[in-house]
Length: 386
Image 1: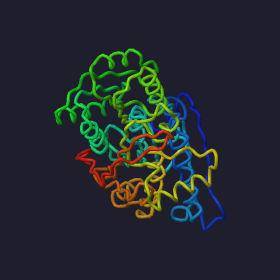
Image 2: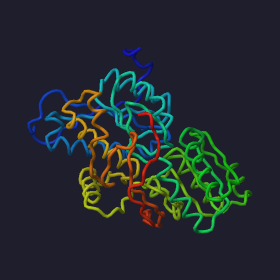
Image 3: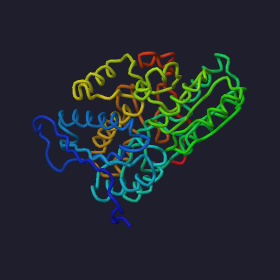
């Protein structure tokens, strides 16, 4: 079925991004396929991801491309779910014949697309944080996993006195995977889970779950929803209900937190990227986004920034391999690194990346104050057989 066409076309944007003079670029363009949720739950986040991709490709083309060849990007809407991902991946892999896929997606979309990546024999960088332990010879990950993200949040809440926790999630792989890890970690630390409830990924009415939270006697609530819209609806309804216990969100990105306005104040988050990171690389990254997109710039966040870095990691792997041939690029991925807005990133630990993590708290102006920093956190055993 390698040459089968998808049954329907999702929204597809094909954009050749070649900036400035030719700079000795020649030959066929190297094509990056980006399946992302332009519609559905991730539609709040997707514009920042696309902007980060476009910036990286523009910068690379302005400096001569990759192996002297220009780079272009093709963006396909995966509708934030499995059915849309199957269409998007089939289009990118078998119709567009992209050289690589670099994707920030829901876990449902990733799980649906990964078999197509393997069938089409393409390299794949998954740039999203996720629930962990998704393994493929073709896939490398530069986002965080629970072993890196959950401990700072739980330990902060416990240090502030929380012992009884209520968990709320979207009912899919990410929501359940993150909260399963959280439950075990809390119980190992002597805490108690007094409630754990889920809503379908596209659900928007959290009334019954919040009613159960109110009566459960919880000291703190931890949520893990599909990024974007479910974060907004849950937070707005939680605040409107008058629930005032400490609230940690394992899935909110900085841009979405800013969009929440007053409802976001006080949310505790754990991230590998915050705009407040005080390094030259991060300042240059934000300045470049502002210059390129002006008033249309979306706030860079813990989902869009890894996408930017993933494009550069692919560039480094191709240059090390001396080729875009899949097997050579996959062999090169663990041996290359890129120093970007989050620091030095290398997908060298079982196809995953050790990361510096930041504990942050959302402020009244929508910014996130860095509360604590945890350098070079190991992702743990994710794919020991790879």
